[in-house]
Length: 164
Image (cartoon, rainbow, N blue to C red; front, side, top):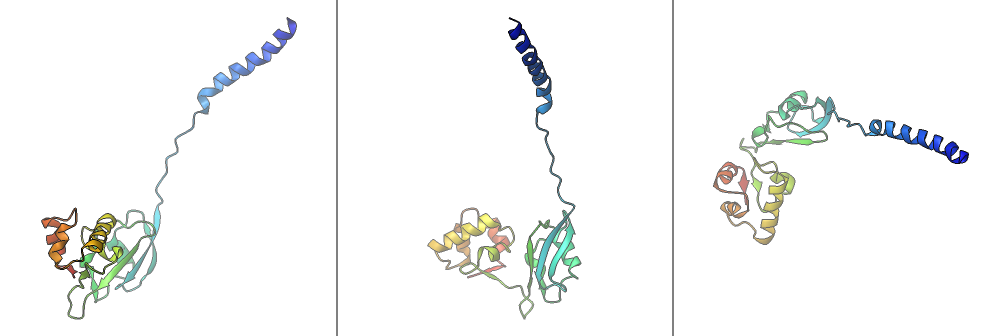
């Protein structure tokens, strides 16, 4: 009987210790804080193309200013200057054609990256356009409205920037 009492004492002590510590052993929620700065690259028609460190939340306009501003040949019409720049993003500032007009993007040959330069076209929509043209090459720019997600309103915004 004494051996049971001797063994029960330490076991009871361990059990009480475990119960008292159990509440303290819950994992703490750690909040991830966004970095204060990011790096992004700018190419094309700017004074000083390259990689720049920007404050988190900076816009494309701020990146262009940091790169010395746009060149005379720059075509900013394809960029949303108020769009937030993300870490690792590459911004390409296009050039105007020799006659001063903006170059049009070919629906039949443009890559997904080129299509995403169009206003309102993101990665998913660019892939839909590419999938559509694989089955039905564009014969008119109006056929773009046959791509799911592109209606008359979106087409009206795109028609000045696209070609076959």
